[in-house]
Length: 217
Length: 227
Image 1: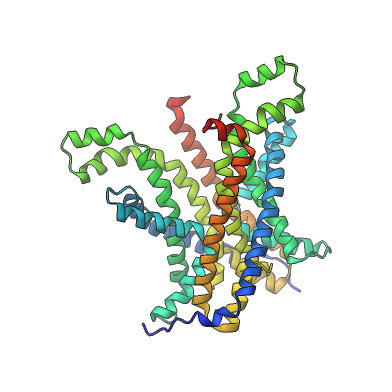
Image 2: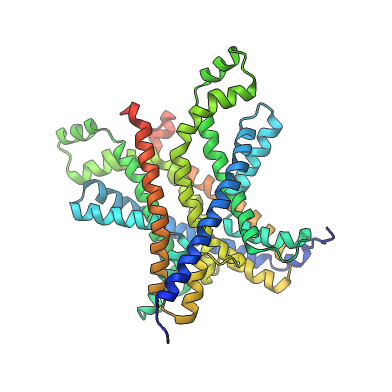
């Protein structure tokens, strides 16, 4: 029986690239959708606000695994056959991260003091100008550390994309383990690669947080 | 879109859905209680232990928080098997979940411990309280009280994350769903039903933890704010 070798390590390296790619898709897609939902969540119209609340509650109240299965089987129902696993996984993770990012960013938008909103209005800025010139520059500063922190969650959760047949790091580990059956070695290496991706992000997030709190120290 | 939704095929399976949901709740409850104990002990060790304990706890927390639960579940399940000990999938699932949530609890509780003001400790010292007394009356209880909302969200996430243990065929709700959909070929309907059940469970867990908080934190209930 062959044992764990450089060939396997190379395979894991490629799979790690796919993990990173899927994470990027999930973050960009989830960021765009999540920002829209965050704006809806603080909209002055009650109906829009409730729609956003329901969306967030549903996404945060169901496991990602179930969401991925629903997308996977749902796409076939809508009429697309043979959709690449990357698309299915990308959509699922986009929806998942949008639900969480919306709630994170809502908090950041609302943490900009009310007086800033009012002052912008008194200066006769249009709602668009108020958002882009006054609120967002302040909210983004507050939002950076938790957003970077959430990136770690996204990277970790791409491991679930294996259930829709997407070969990323965790699935690659499973495949190798099926052929050489050295679960401990294989999954330790897989875990180490995940750690190598996530730990710098966590550290960066913490450092940003400390930098942001400089005035309160 | 010509798909005919058919939920009637699933009606016959409701006892199994219920069984799965019950096991999910059991898994989560056991992992929550054990994870809370592990996490709190680790937080105390990290705040007040000798340097090597601090280092050990810090490594444990960072390693667990920066690797996916799925991989942790695999390592526990297959790792224990290679050691020659036979454990059921459910046991392996609980072990993995406890190890996982213990690290997150440690981080949350640590924030709570740090929020206890130094003057409180000095006051307790002056009153001649012993170390365990100080920890129990002055540090732990107010700390937990403060971070209780964060713990609540973490344990709801734990309940949802327990679905991952279906990958090692622990017989909880998601695994039940996987079996039912391959029996009935009603995949989409099955996962809609299970999604709704999870949604309901997350509300139930949230309300249960809120009621538990009301019962335990008497002072908070009477004052209306955390101290």
